[in-house]
Length: 357
Image (cartoon, rainbow, N blue to C red; front, side):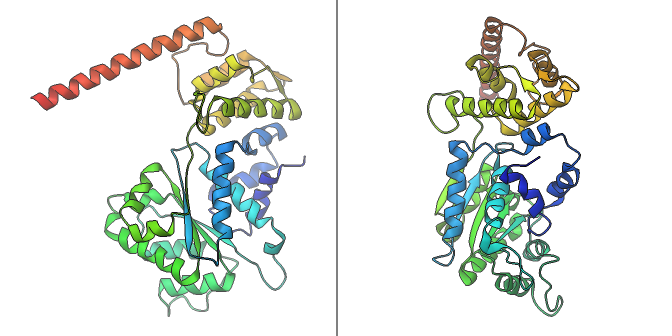
């Protein structure tokens, strides 16, 4: 099977300094996964919000050498941040000018997950760990962590560092060293002309708001990835979501098993109800449906319902979302909306009672 370009990332991971624990496990088992599941699980649909974020990171990378600059990629869990970063790494490391030779292995981008309790030594260690097997420092003991990182950046001609899980710097146990860690990042940017990407949960924006000197350097572009919604306007709207589901249908029908028409408007809405428009949930749902199909050659609404009943998100107390009528789905949605409004009113009343007492 010829995998798509983004799937080539798994071949690159052995020589690319990225966070490889999860991806390498996936790489090791890739050959044993059915081609149809590979296609669903590892394919990337470049919807407009994805393209905007990707182009922002790519523009930041290409800004290397002009000025120290960066961008932010923030969003809730499961909306595709990790997928986007892997796709970006695949794009960069696929470029001809960054192919390894017998004399030199260029490392244009390093992916660094921020440690759970970040300090300057821990962050420096994490950066150096990304280049194990590619770069060997002359001495580990005679130089400061910053000096070792600085020499590595020069030796490998690093142009960008991606700091993922940036919100870890907001943890209570990390706050005592947050200012020092951010000052280190700023120093690396200034002295090496580095570009950076800060990726993480939306609350990470607070870090930049509280440190204007760093914020000025990462004001190049700010991108937020959000779950798809069913509105008519804005990023991630119903049209984008429908196109995404249609692409999944095409993938199924190309690799097999085939699937019933999930790109129709009514079914697109049902899938959104089931997954809340979160990419990770969508991938889990259809991967599970493929496994449930077993020896069948076609995924039916009943199989998709069985898959949904087995997943761990958005349970609907046995409601047959994918097998019942459109009218019943409409009634269920209205009932749930009414129930939610009642719960919100009750919670508001309780808050008012506590404040008045």
